[in-house]
Image 1 (tube, rainbow, N blue to C red):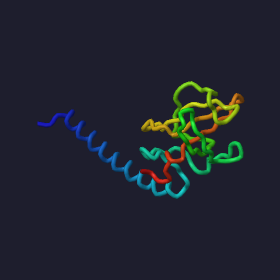
Image 2 (image 1 turned 90 degrees about the vertical axis):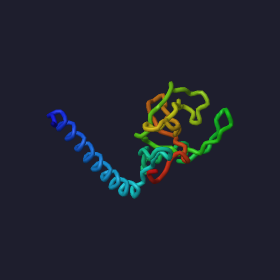
Image 3 (image 1 turned 30 degrees about the vertical axis):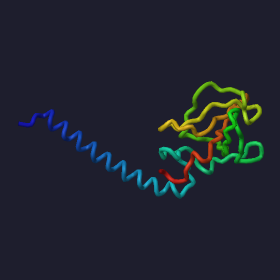
Length: 140
């Protein structure tokens, strides 16, 4: 004999399944729209990171190629915002590639992949220097 608790559990599971299907359909529709409007995603997990319209010239250019103290070379693009990024560590000016700016490591908020750096000036201006090979134009 089914109890009220069993029926509530069944209803809850049924609604969860329906909600999951609706979310998946909405995600697929959003994906089709997003691929057409310049969105940039984490190449590792597909999280939305920023958009092409957030490209920002810093020091006269959007893209830059730098090397770190260990000799690793990074080609980065500068972006005004990157809502899909979180920051790690304390800001530092040590080895900064942009004089007058301190930096923090920027990571994907979903998978934690290293995407680049967030730069902050003493005046409070900020931008992101994102590793271009870590971004994808289409969700993976």
